Image: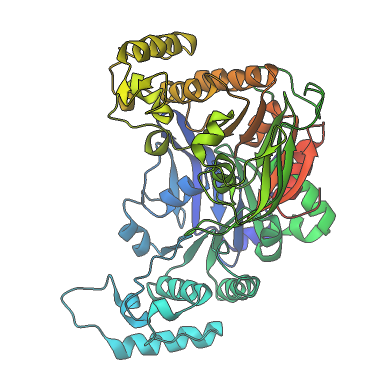
Length: 524
């Protein structure tokens, strides 16, 4: 659906930057597919899309970090390849990335002067005058002598924007700029964006939050699976009330999910087994570690034969939830109950022995040891344990026999069992992980983004394997950022946001729309 129309207002403000048929491919994926987009002065152009929609690739091309494979980029109507980040800056395109790129040990002034001509002394007085003029126009206050480490995230973001304006940017790209801000910081950023466009700048505002797009955007474009699937121009935005706006954008973002052809769509818990839940999570709390969000009051239950999905924008606590259930992260509250017995205080090994298995999303970094042979990687979580080890001695013949059986059973394509697992394709590495976790005593399995980065054939094979696991009566927790995958696989789907479960829906005909509303912070 594309409802954009040319208006007299648009003709008065021709685009600063236009993309015509822009396509970018990476091995195994089309990241941007025939994108057409116009970015006009005096507008905040909000760009919406889930993880993997193609937003980051689009930013990379506009910033000069990567080049399109097809199509062209026009600057003021002239086809202009953007060959490097420096070239982008010279064309008036400034980018403020999601994570602040300032040097925390330097002052604000020193950060603003970075990248200047090395053969000239820094012109502090000139910098001070320009900063004061811009700050007065925009109604912000900047402390040039303060160290960046002393500033709030909102203040650091203002410095990033100021740096772009000092380089005479006409187009400012803000990449998920609200993700680390407080509500007050988000409000201040919205006011700042409005002042900037009133001064004639064009802004591309990247977000996955519908409320922010509605509050700050003058024009909204939606990306999905690398394609632009819709655009809402200013006159359409002004004509819609809140309910109409939400319905229209949710339809563009989520629409009706496709079935992947590998099996029937599951409804509610129709094929889940009878009896009490196999896995229960009650009020689970996990404190924040590093940049990871904390988990707060997570409660869910999964029955035998049920596939329970976790949807959400990546980085909202999915990995922390998986690792807490597997015993890799300590819980600070709540309880995990498996087959009627609490697992609280038990480590990874004991939980695994009881039948709770976990497939990480990091196949090479965490799931396997790339330099070790395929045969050893099957048994990494059993090292030192019988029957493959006796009195600390490896039972090599038994291990080779068992590894051969797993290789045949799970169709792992490898030159030999002695081949380092890191030399296999991503799909075959994933088969090794699946074989390891499903073999010998699995009762419940946590899959974290199991098809991420796989080709179509391996994606379908992995999904079919997960279905077969549930059909055997195991409980499955399927974490994925691919909503269509969840809708084609799961009986029920919960949405995680900022470390909390925003809600759970049965997989009925309107599930896509209801999940979409939960993902953007609205009631299902």
